[in-house]
Image (cartoon, rainbow, N blue to C red; front, side):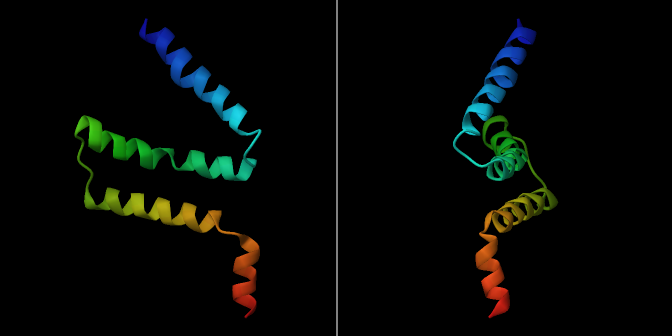
Length: 84
């Protein structure tokens, strides 16, 4: 029963909705969203399961969020800033 659940819910429905979402979102933006998954998983582990994250782990979460934010910025805006 657990194997069926793991095959249907997270895998099949997850990939199905990801493919459906690619109709409306560019692939580069969708990839950035998937890179955010470890941060969400860690935060849910803290909130739901009661896991504890070390200071280095929190630094890693902030680093991932910062890098994803920088990658999502409009590159033409960044080029204009550099040329000024």
